Length: 221
Image (tube, rainbow, N blue to C red):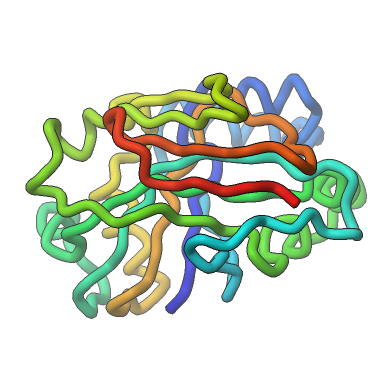
């Protein structure tokens, strides 16, 4: 099982990352980001490795970072083997969705980006991916591209989004990813986070919802 994640798939999140100086600062890189939003060219992928937090377990704050952020996302689970999938057939390759958290060591990411280095340690450390209970697509009230999701911390909503605001649809992401990676049963695709990412702290309680249904419950220790 591999975890494939998508970066910069909500324009408001791209803007907040630019304001936080967490996107590449060179003129050429800024121009690429602008073209990505305006022209909707290729999605941006990264891999999170074997980082899945076991269901029902707490997230233990690692000692190598002082700034772990939550990034709440719709996630889909691949249930057929596929390669070079046509976008019009991509919906056949997943039947379950959930909500997940892409935990990010923001201080490590910031440092790596400033030095022009890869930021794998910021995204693919142990337990950096949490996924809630899986839900069959046919049981959802709305289409996959019309789903509300949110994250509550200690009972207060801190991040919310709707999949209609994606720059690249779920089916496009599945199809495009399959050009580069053989998709296999059990693979998980994180589809990008909306604006509103922020830090977590020891002692907090995180609850993630899809269409008002709580699917993920994590304590930070």
